[in-house]
Image (cartoon, rainbow, N blue to C red; front, side):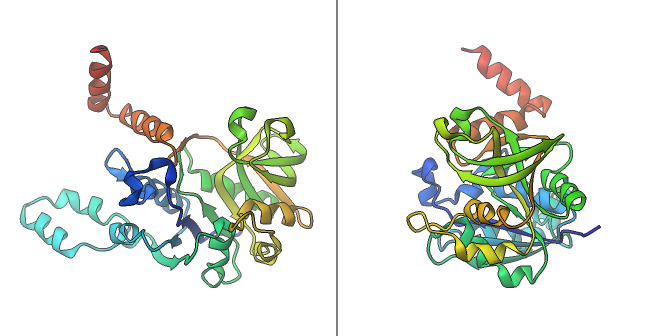
Length: 285
């Protein structure tokens, strides 16, 4: 059994669906309760045994490494105030994960973002997690995909079934056969039209990729300025075995205002005090 030790989180996008707040705050730092969205994605990695995480940033995303950095002055102030119980929240990942940050100089898509991390990956198979996708699940989704990877020995695309009117916004798998939660991937279509929908198996921001992907990213034809990771997977699937795995979990699209609200309400409902606030507010009409 191979261990997936490394993960890439592409986080360089503009976040245009959340303007104007994303002029100043990275969309990955928008909160679900008191934690930024990217924190949930990092926690998913750590809970799955991944302890080396590379985050791909643009020049306006310094808030992300700042958030993950040590805060000795704050920690000293908490200790002085007798609030030692808050120290773990300030530096939760100390001793649990190592972070590196790579700058994507131009917005050239997720394929380019992954390609920039080739030296970080250093010949290993690895995980990719899109931070727009916060997924609430009993077992971390990237852990589910790691189990699938160990069953097949291939790259794995995390999918769930979606109706065509929603699937058209994402990448959709062209399957050549399905058994249980596994589907052999014949191809991969990014944002297909409803009329040309190849299946309902929709990619939702979680991948385990073999290092072979670096042979296929250079073969991708850019769409505008973007080199898209799903297009590289599409080419790879025509030469190597790739599987889609239908994971368990409730996914929230943090790239949209609707998903942002849904995630906050769903996580708040888990706390009885916050649930009461929501209930009381709704009862006022």
